[in-house]
Length: 209
Ligand SMILES: O=C(O)CCC(=O)C(=O)O
Image (cartoon, rainbow, N blue to C red):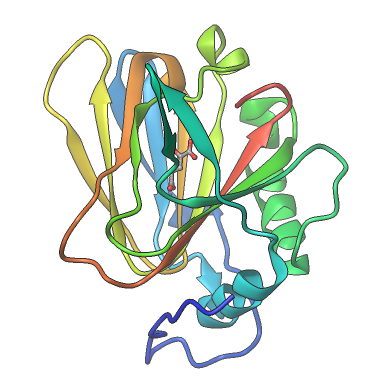
């Protein structure tokens, strides 16, 4: 697929590897039992990983029924279920590192990987929580690796209240944890300021969608 991403001048290594977690992860309590962890610049070689994923992932367009119309989902998607081979060994490495860091707190491994390609600022995802599965009733974690053009992730409490803005940069990790999927919602809004592509890689435990 030809999707041009202007890589970072600072990210000149070809080797793709997650960095350390540990004390480099910064936690913010959101309230209502929800929190986010952020680790800026977690993936070294993020330019290379972006190029590899653009080529290796079978990106597909989806459409959804909205009332009486069928509309295109404004991003391309791929999903790797439990036991499926991930499209790049660096994603296995990232998942192993997340498992090691969160094992005790999460009590189970991350099992699935959802990938989204935002082709430019017109692609987006509307306000939602990952509540199709266990996130509706249980505390859980969703770990997101962001590569490519920086985009804004918005978070807002379901009961009402101001939205928090978090800028997701190239190679950054954000983990939404605790009650975040059921007491908060998140979104990637459309923007006229962004013209480049972004890939989001979401690791989730079994039964969380
Ligand atoms: O693009 C992102 O990082 C967020 C993706 C997301 O919220 C989802 O696919 O459920």
